[in-house]
Structure formats: C-alpha cells, structure tokens
Length: 264
Image 1 (tube, rainbow, N blue to C red):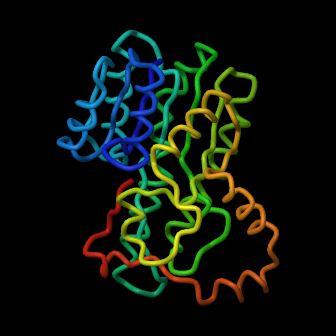
Image 2 (cartoon, one colour):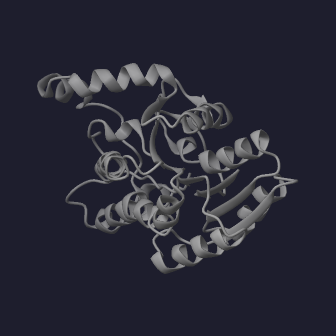
Image 3 (tube, rainbow, N blue to C red):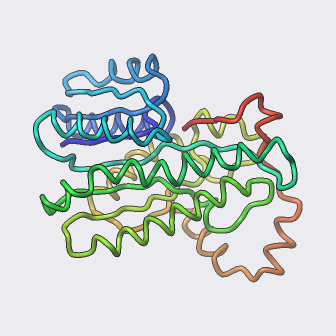
C-alpha cells in the first residue's frame, strides 16, 4: 500500500497515517505538513513502513509538485491513495477588515490546496487505471454556519469540487472519495467552546474512513449519526434553518484565538 497524506502532523491526518500503517505495516507513506518536527514525531511511530516526510505548506503549488514527483519516484509508481486532508478553520465575520486575509487563507488551504495536492498525481493514476483520490470535507459544507463563512464556504466548495472530479474520472479506474467528518476530537476542535454532538475520537474516525476508502465510497459522513443530521440540514427550509441557527454559537475568530491557523 502506498499512501500520500497531507495535514499529517496531527489530528485526522496523523490518525489516518497510523491506521494505514496498522492495516498495511510494510506500506510506503508520504507525510505532508508544515511542521517538520511534528512530521518526524509521526514518522517515528510508523515503524516498519517506508516513510517519506515533506515539510511544506499546501498553498505552495511548486513544493507540492516536487513532493509528489519525489514520492512517485520512491518505487517508480503512483500511490494507491492520495488523501487531501490539510485544512484550517477559524471564525470569520464579513465586514471585519482583520478577517479578510483569514477568509482568503482558509479558501487557499482547504480548496486550492486540495486541487494542488491531487493534480500532480492524476496523470500517473489515470495511466495506471487505479487508485483513490480522497478529499476530507466537512458537514460544515452542507449549510452555511453563522460566524464560519470562510470555513463553510471552503468545505462546500470542496464537496462540489470532489463531485466534479469524480465525474471527470468516471471510467478511468481512479475513484474519488469524499469524506465529510462531523466533530472529531483533534487540536482543531479543542478550540471550540460550544457543545459538539457525536464527538468522535480521531482513531475511530480513521478506521471508518479507511473502510470507506477501501470500498471506494463516493461520499460518506462520519460518524454515522451525523449523516442523518446532514440529510436533515440539506432539506431544511431556509426560514426554519435561519430561525434555528440565528443564535448558534460561533467559531472563535482568528484575532481572538491568537492566530489564523488551526491545523488538523
């Protein structure tokens, strides 16, 4: 098994890398994240695997392309799965000047970074006629949440992008898997100061996610109770949605949290 994972230095990405290693101990795993020291820590837990670490920011398209080329050169083959997991979250408020850069950064990482993660691998995976392109979205992309316009917009865009990509690659042998997590216990959600229904441990999430990837599911919400919530949100009339969520708790803005990045 050969897997390339972005946002791999903590949270969901780290859990996915560990679960890949648990299932396929002799796998080749590419780990991507900004923090080299944390990548080294994760790599040290994957004994027996061939681990390649690429400390970079997914908004650096050239660096991602070089990492993809280096990873494919390890044994001359494209990966079996590319997991675009890198993501950031912060509250944003339209009209607040300080939030403009945060809004753009969220979209750059969560949407453009996903495109740039997949792009270098697609030709080789098409040529082989096999593989999985896995995008980690969020139930926050189902409906726009107040105070989280940047994050909700980025995840809605990710879901739509992945759907487009799935249809583009239909018949090629390359499967596109969209995974929409609910609340997962990670450093990102530790910053939330409001109730998080169906909060799930990252390792439990990773097990279910790897099952979905193995099956080649087109779209899955984890944990399963959030699937019912997501379906309900999709069909909720606007007037009722607006009334129910008008007083919903807001994500902390970056200026209040002391920074603009909250990596997975």
